[in-house]
Length: 153
Image 1 (cartoon, one colour):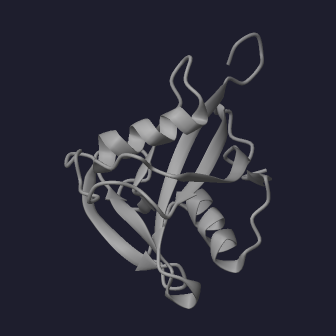
Image 2: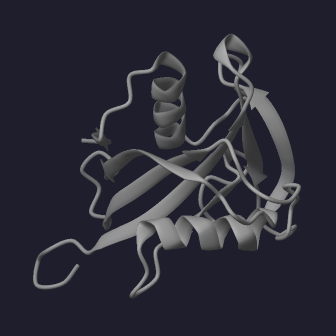
């Protein structure tokens, strides 16, 4: 907190998708040793937006660093303003993207942070999924995404 105000922390998420209709799948990683939502399924690539970097640039960088894919054709899904139900934490702004086109075969490049990488049907996600990410995946599945969303308020 600076001068009584929250610091807003930006992050970018990439959901790689394949298939169509009810057979649409998303690539998820099982988090471990990160200190946040370990043992939860999450976007295969995600991380903080660095100083001087756009959310698009961060999404592409994270996809390369975490799963080794390049030329990620990003489609913007939503910007989510997020907090933890009134707890005195930094507020978050998360930029979510999907991609159906990329170069390279996704693989775990940070094995200390990801225990597994799995393609999962959008209508049959594993448990547990990071809650705010699940909200976005449910909206992607149902076709109800909005440019701006909130979580935890």
